[in-house]
Length: 427
Image (tube, rainbow, N blue to C red):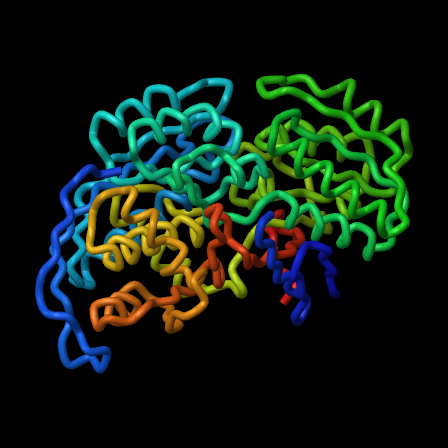
C-alpha cells in the first residue's frame, strides 16, 4: 500500500506518509554559570534550572481516552529528564483536567496552572478546548504546548511565540485519509463530522483530497458537541448508498459506529481518524459482540511502533498507581513536548517561558545547523558542550517552523482485527 500526500514537501517512503508542512510557565530567574565548553566534550557549561510543568489534558469528556497515554508521556519524560541530571530539574507535575467544550473543566484548570506559575501547560488534546484558554495562558506569560492540537487556526494565532505543538495540522491527516479511501477503490463516500474547528478542518481537507482521486462525496452530515442522538445523520448517510463512510468524531463513535453496523453497514468500509481511533477490544464502553474487523483509520504516529517505549510508558503508569494503558495515541508527542521544553531551557540557560520558547525551533532542528540526537541526555550533552542539538524524538523529526508547527510528520494507517483492536498496516 502506498499513500500519496499533496502538502508542501511531502514524500512517501515505504508506505509511511512523511509530510513536510512548513508554513502550513514557571516564572523563574535564569541561572547559568560554569565555563564555556570547547565542543570536544572536555568541559561542559553548568546549569542549575528548575522548571514547573502543568497539564491540561482530558481526564473527562469526549477525549478522555487520550488522557492516560498523554499523561504517561509527560510523566515518563519528566522522570527521564530528572534522572539524566544535566542541570534541569522538573518538580512535581501539576496535573489538571481539560475536559471538553461541553463540561468546561479547562476553565478551572487553566486558572490553577496560572496561579501555580507553571513554566508550561501541556495540552489540551482538543483544539476547540485550547482555543478557549490559550489567550489566558498567553496573557499570563506561560508556555502552552499541545501534543495533539491539529487545527490550522493555531498557525497564525496571536500567541507571543508561546504556543507550540508536536502534532501536525489537520491538512496532513486529511490528505492521507483522502488518498487512503481513494486507493482502496471507493468512489462514493459519505461523511459524518463534528461541527467544530477540528471536524470542519479535517473534513474539508479529506473531501478535497478524496475528490482529487476522482471520488464523489454523496452525503455529509454534521453534529454539535454535546449531541447524543445521531439518528438523522445516520439515516441521511445510509440513504445516499455510499461505498464508504468517514467518521470524523470523538467519543460519539460509541453511538454512531454500533448504529451503522446494526443497520447492516460493513465495518470494512468505515474509516476513522485520530479523534476516535481506539482499541475497542480493550474498552468496556464498546458493545459486546459488535465487530469493527476490517475498518481502517489514520492518526499521527511515530516512524515506527516502539514496543520498548510503550512498555516504559505502561510501567510508569502502573508505578504511579494508574490503570494499564489501552491506547498509546499521542503519548509520543507528549513525551517529546517535555524533552523539547527541557532542551530549550538548557539552550537558553533560562527557566523563563519566553526564553525557552525562543529556543524551541533551534533544538528541534528548525535552524538547520544542529547535531542529530534522539534522547534528552545525548542532546543535553551537545548543548552543554557548546553545540546545537537537533532532537528527533518518538513522534518523528518534528523540526518546528517559525509558527511553532512541526514541519515533518508521520501519519500512520491502522486496521481493526477480529479482536476489535487495531494494528498498523503502513509499515
